[in-house]
Length: 232
Image (cartoon, rainbow, N blue to C red):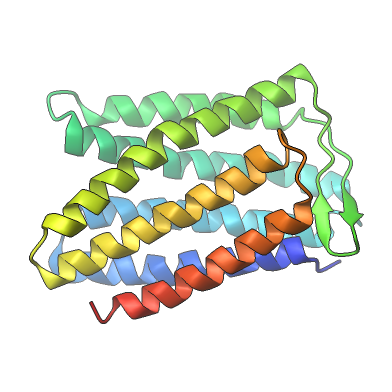
């Protein structure tokens, strides 16, 4: 078992998302708000993704075969969360179309990506004694899965962020403003996570040390902002 800066970044992300899951669950129970219910499931499934990824990173250098078995379940839970996000977009902006179309479209893509993740080859190494470089083999299968995941993150996270920023500005209800404030922060945090993990490392070749530093800083700032958000 080895603890790295990469492990720390995912541990902080797990703590932040678990804390916000509790916050949004409490809001849902008090107000019986449907969007809050949906967003609770988003944060819950992303928390499971962070938990699985954190567990895998603890053993990635000692037992790569075990970690290989965690890749598909992690991606699967991540895509369930993303599928619920697609449901939310259709529910809020395309009310003449069943939101289940958005959900199942992304869910089926997630199943395919999860299946392909089992076959992705990688050779993890510890960079500068701090961060894990997964060392994925950049073959056509890997590039397709990364490109599809990056594209889905982009087309879902950006519109949802703008939607809740708009709702935050327009809402006069204090509790609703708190909820939307937290949602916007969550989107920003997950966008940073996705960009750092999928784009900077795989396409730009940025050192994983900087990826992990950005995630740790984003997680800490996000947690502070959530705590401050109680006072809005």
